[in-house]
Length: 65
Image (cartoon, rainbow, N blue to C red; front, side, top):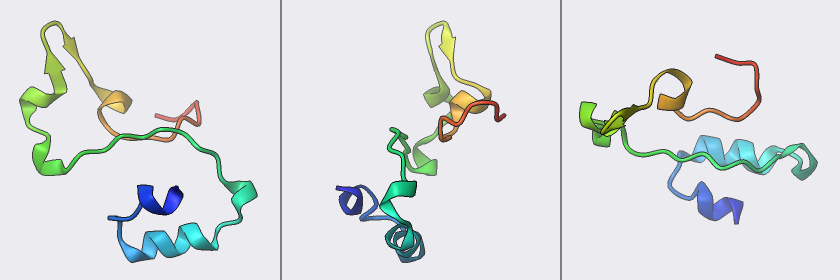
């Protein structure tokens, strides 16, 4: 499953994942989209806008940002 999630990522990242012990991994959802898809209109809709930490992918580690 993990290999499928990172299939289109750079080989260097995939090597780091393969080298990491399974017991050190924690699964959390993180959703990305290509930078060219991020237009000013894509950060908000109606009265809702995402800013700060909500506007970029982060691991949910708490206390950062």
